[in-house]
Image (cartoon, rainbow, N blue to C red; front, side, top):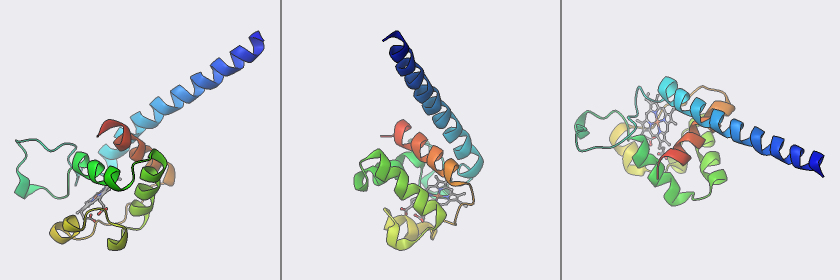
Length: 123
Ligand code: HEC
């Protein structure tokens, strides 16, 4: 019984640390691979005309509108980053304004981490 409980606690502990790690590294990946084009948040101080790409908070809202579940959200993002395509886009006006986003060459695990970070930190 006690052994069983300890096993459970270990599993929960591992899941929690994994999650925290996933999100932290997600932010780091955003900084390294996305921030040169995407700012994090839309604020009244942002000069809309100088934006190079839609802000992350706005895109996240748009993705959640189409893919509400975490798994679907992550899958959409991994897929889009691997092979951007107007057909898959959740923001056609973005493509009209900025042109299609270039493919991002990072490992799938990093795409998943950045997707998880977006899903958890923006509404
Ligand atoms: C070189 C600039 C650049 C980089 C780097 C970049 N993006 Fe983008 N991104 C864009 C542009 C421009 C658009 C708008 C056009 C579009 O939607 O394809 C866009 C659109 C998007 C969209 C909306 C796609 C859709 O459905 O139309 C998502 C999601 C996204 N970016 C996520 C990311 C993430 C996550 C990263 C980092 C891993 C990243 N981008 C890196 C330029 C960039």
